[in-house]
Image 1 (tube, rainbow, N blue to C red):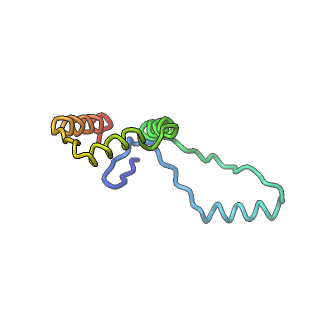
Image 2 (cartoon, rainbow, N blue to C red):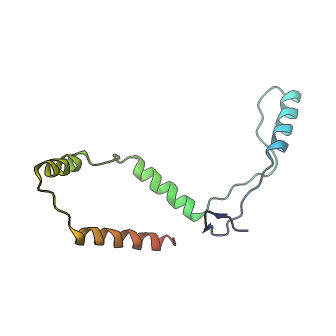
Image 3 (cartoon, rainbow, N blue to C red):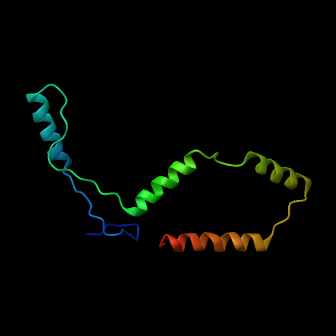
Length: 108
């Protein structure tokens, strides 16, 4: 079974459907019977798709990086203030093509 989210078709990993009501009722019954916390029972399983695993790895890598390059922002701000900042259409086109290739590799 595949999941479609905003026109993105997953890689057919099995999704797990759980009824929250059933869990609440089961948890309430088990907590009334045994005051100590117990681990859930009943073969619940979660499968992570390769795309989700890749996104998790990227998130961990990016989490250690600064959100932006402060020195580069300062240089650009100064060149804007001086009137010396120039736009390079070749650099912009190259960056757009690189982004497009990266998205194509992800299948988007």
